[in-house]
Picture (cartoon, rainbow over the protein chains, first blue to last red):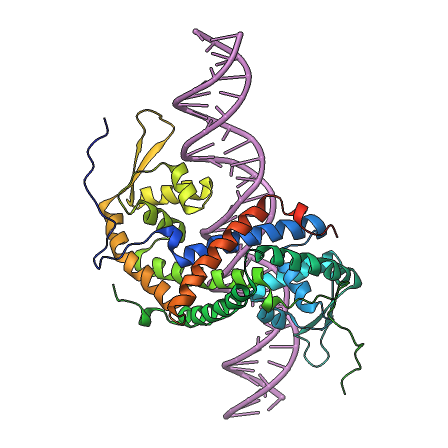
Length: 170
Length: 170
DNA sequence: TTGCAACTGTTTCATATGAAACTAAACTGA
DNA sequence: TCAGTTTAGTTTCATATGAAACAGTTGCAA
């Protein structure tokens, strides 16, 4: 016979409740992980590259020449991550590095033809995955999703700098 | 004078283009990272716990008793992550473990009063963060966001099992 | 000049992560 | 009953990660 359990609600001091599966940060994290894991497998299997490498290919795919720092900005990766991805790509002949003329600290980075070839192959694949992901959405929903993500990212950026001030003091 | 650059479009074989900042997997990843980083700092600073620990507190916060495996399911973490979080929580006296009567492989896990106290303090904080994050959204937008995330998660789960079949063969 | 601060990118180091191996317990079927 | 299999959870091991220290270069001000 089951032991009697003290009746206990999930309510907190101010009566609010929290179910993890309804909690936005949790849902975003799970969704992003699911998606990242899938595309990572895809890129790895077909082209032998990681997501950081893919991001670099994506921003250099237009033929532009950027420095490591500029790549870091545009890919939202930190400089360590970029530095390591670049060194892997140098090994696998995906990227070309020449030191800048005016500023020898900055290295000018360009994709090799091999990487450009990957780029032209991978883009349709990436877009196809994205299309699959949003295939259950109507046009209007997809457009709104776009706006909602932008708004939330802006808000998340705000809150990331000094969230303490705007949250209860406990 | 800038060197003449070969005119190069970003188009791929089928004419599609890809800008990383418009690419859904990238945007989801960046947003989830921003959010996770912020809440992780919050939990760490105020309560000295990590996100895995927070998730365990969240699912046990109602006073329920679960096994490690059940926790793994409900928190979308893998068993290794759960095992390690539990061992940390045992050290910091946040969790109580007693081996099951009927099945001694399963450990029955419950929060200690100390953890329940954290729970009651952290929930309003977590909800406040969530509210801030969606503060730029209208009621309708927030409701739609909910639906969109659910739809996309379902789709992402589908695609995570056998994406090859549904994507171009390259 | 030259000495110091700022900047770019790399390396180090300590920790986090996850796949696979492993241990212990519990079923299963002859 | 007792081998073989499945399950729960832990540990190992190889790799990933990021903060901080670092080396080299540039800019600036005295």
